[in-house]
Amino acid sequence: MASPPRPVPERPASKIGLGVMLRVAAMACMAGLFGLVKVASERGVPIFETLFFRNAFAFIPIAIYILRTSGFGVLRTSRPGAHAARAMVGLTGMIGGFMAVSHLPLTEATALSFSAPLFMTALSVPLLKEAVGPHRWAAVAVGFVGVLIMIRPDPANMANIGVIFALIGAVGSAGAMITIRQISMTEPGPRIVFYFTLAGAVAGLASLPFGWVMPDRETFLLLVVMGLLGGVGQLLLTEAIRVAPVTVVAPFDYTQLIWASLFAFIVWDELPRPLTLVGAAVVAASGIYILYRETIRRREPRP
Image (cartoon, rainbow, N blue to C red):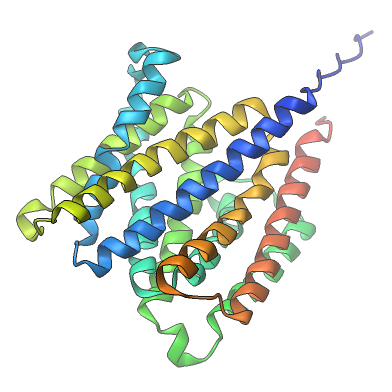
């Protein structure tokens, strides 16, 4: 007779609280990152040059983290092709997001990025061969209604280049999450982050012959801070999942809209449109419900 399964030890409440704070801080970093991307774009910095600085200076906090935790031996890998595929998909999402914030109000671009979990659920069927039940499909459908509310479905607005790039960025982010799920069985988080950051820096540097601008001192400092925020934000995301369950901390990703709204109000005196807030609330609710159903599915005993 099989022995009963051992109960999973619960994390202390202090650890869960720490995980939530780390996740909220990570969202503040990401909101600041995209805000500075928009400022750099307004100063005439090309997107691929921005891509280089975002990844090159992210190496500083990432290298310090790896040195203090696992050591650089963690970078040895036998799956370079998997890292290349993850980088290609992830950079598509990053570039789409950067292009979106350069053409849209910061709060609108941020809200549209929340559709990534919806695309991830839809793509997990053909790519991961996962079974998605009616509850999650219904949540995806409701979430896309929220997206339509945000983009105000008239032909003129739906053809907006910023909206198109925002949706490309969301699809790329969804694809990146799927590829991370595929390779994380053998590749630890620091290794995945390192090689993605390396690929981003190389891709940005490769655009040098195609027209970089020489930033002034203030713009250069802005680009450096942007890269540091990106690296610190990525590490905070990793640490939040390490100390607390993802089902607890993931809903706090939507606090990024609060930080983005604050940044946009301070810098551009910009307030989010009412329809953007309504659509974002619908998308956030559907994303949280998808996460809830995913948790229930994973807890169900398998035959």
